[in-house]
Image 1 (cartoon, rainbow, N blue to C red):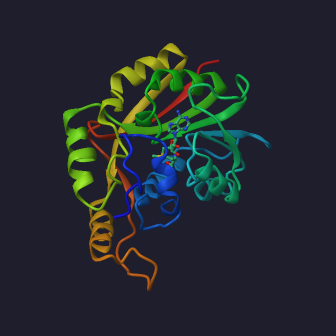
Image 2: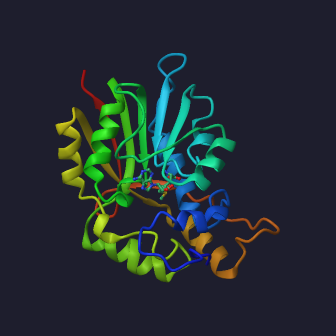
Length: 249
Ligand SMILES: C[S@@+](CC[C@H](N)C(=O)[O-])C[C@H]1O[C@@H](n2cnc3c(N)ncnc32)[C@H](O)[C@@H]1O
């Protein structure tokens, strides 16, 4: 399991530099981000007009880009991590090095703002939500996914996940997980009516990926078959959840 090469505090963004080679390995340490990006992109409709802008906050290496292909957006990605942005740019994303809590873009510029697996990494997630809503034009769409601030989430996403070859150790700080009700209230304060649904990885795909990682079969070499991992809806938002909402005019 590739972990950050140095011993860094939990959630330290420098971990993404140490793990830079993992972003685009489909079965690698960030594999679940690929599955989540596909599920997030499915919430985004085709662009409403030529030149429509999608701002991808905390875009990482641009994993959303292939799933937006053909939808007609200009894809601008904002991230703290330069090594990730270089990879995002190579996948057609206009890369902006910046903080999601102080985005260097003008009010109302975005038809869509995406914030995938970002808020649980931002110490002041409310500030990032305010920025996301500020960037949206009236009628614009916010799509996000994050980890809930619950005992079950801390157990599954940190204590158990970090013991298995799933998420890199130390990538999450459970103290930053985002209470779902507080998130809905914060979006409402900024004019976005956010609707939530619980999501989870599909079991066959997850088990196949885990098995390949335990065997080391995720490393470069002959392709190993198995069900394609997918994110599916689930009845509870207690762990992982998606949000989708439109900014009022
Ligand atoms: C778990 S990754 C998700 C990346 C991408 N959204 C995806 O789903 O593939 C979190 C990303 O957020 C970035 N990040 C963390 N805090 C940030 C902040 N305050 N402003 C901008 N980016 C941030 C990290 O550098 C990293 O690329």
